[in-house]
Amino acid sequence: MSNQNKEQVAKNSQEDQKKKPTYWERVIQGKGTVAEPWPTAEELWNDPEVQKSIQDHNQSVKKRSGL
Image (cartoon, rainbow, N blue to C red; front, side, top):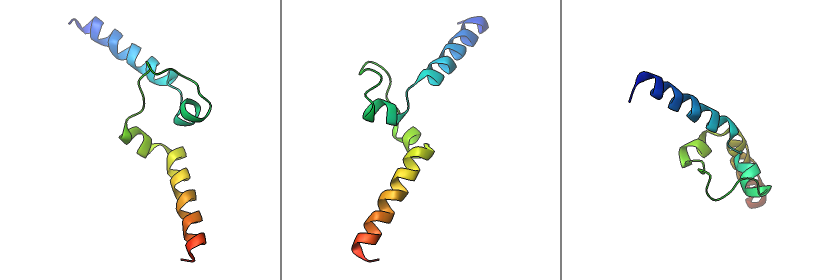
């Protein structure tokens, strides 16, 4: 593969990542299709939106259990 082809593939990959719907848009709002690449566990774990949801959940569990 030539350098020009590699650069084009990298550019297309970056554009695809920019267009990817967020977890919220994909699951809750129903945007996207099954054929689109879903985020990996690592991507989800590093997503600040997901981290906030996890923290909110943990706080609500602590409140209910009296911890």
